[in-house]
Amino acid sequence: MLSRTTTSIVTFVHPFAVAGYTDRLPPGKYELFVEEEVLQGHSFTAYRRTATHLLIEWKVGGSELRLVDPGNLAMALAQDQIVTTNDKNNKNSEAALSPSKDPK
Image 1 (cartoon, rainbow, N blue to C red):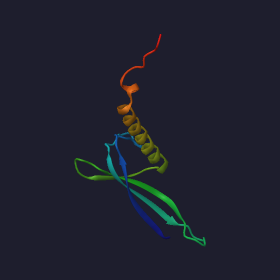
Image 2: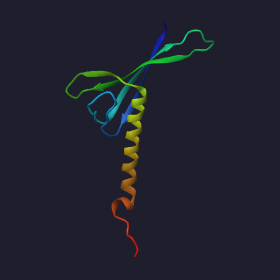
Image 3: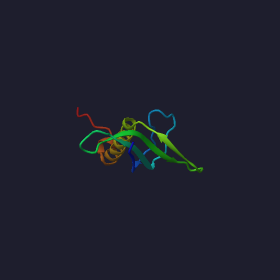
Image 4: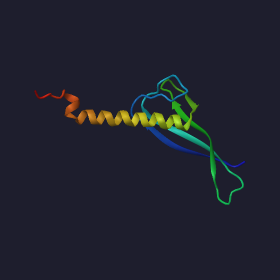
């Protein structure tokens, strides 16, 4: 069976957790490996994802390749983006810096 592995980088701005693991990981850039197999019997080349791994580089040395669900990883990335957007909005918003005044 033919297969391929593609590599990309995902970046987290804030500490994060991926469902299925209890620890929080520090912000940073992480390598993502996606393994796919060729689907046979089609008139065109098609692939099916078989595994997604996130490479964790530990500060104390060593690394860990974690099997992650692509949906859970997408959710963690979306949550990181929401927090980042909220941080930017709060820094530039007067409403976030002072309470609104109720006219009487």
